[in-house]
Image 1 (tube, rainbow, N blue to C red):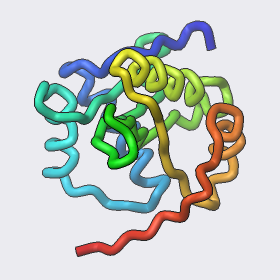
Image 2: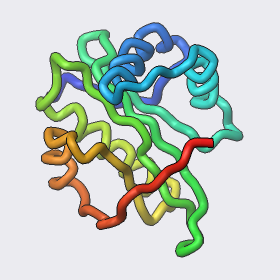
Image 3: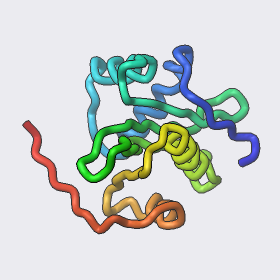
Image 4: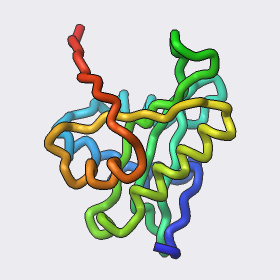
Length: 148
C-alpha cells in the first residue's frame, strides 16, 4: 500500500468522505441524522474542538478514514487520545490501510504529548481485532452505556 497517502481531512473532502462515513455507520447498523453528520464534519475544522480526522487517499480517491479526539483523564495529566471511528473501503480491506490510519493517530498523539491511544470495537469484529492485536493490547475493560 505504498500508494496510499494518509493526511488530514480538508474542507473540500466532504463529498468523498461522506460515503466512507456512511459505510462505517452501515457496518455498525446505526443511522446518523444529517444534522449530526454536518456537525461532526464542521468540528474537524474548529480549532476549539478536540475532534480530528485523517483520510487515506489512493489514486485520487478516499479509501479510508479515522476520527480521534483528546480528553482529560483522572489518572494522567496529559489528555489521552480516543480513536473513535476507523473505516476502510471494501476494495482495500486487508491491504494495510487501517494500519496506516492507526499509526497516523499514534504519530499525532505523540506530537500532542498524549500518553495513550485507545479505542473500542465490537466483540464480533474479528477481522479488525486481528489487526488491533498487532498494534495494541486489550485493556480487559468492558464497556457499559445507557442512552438518555
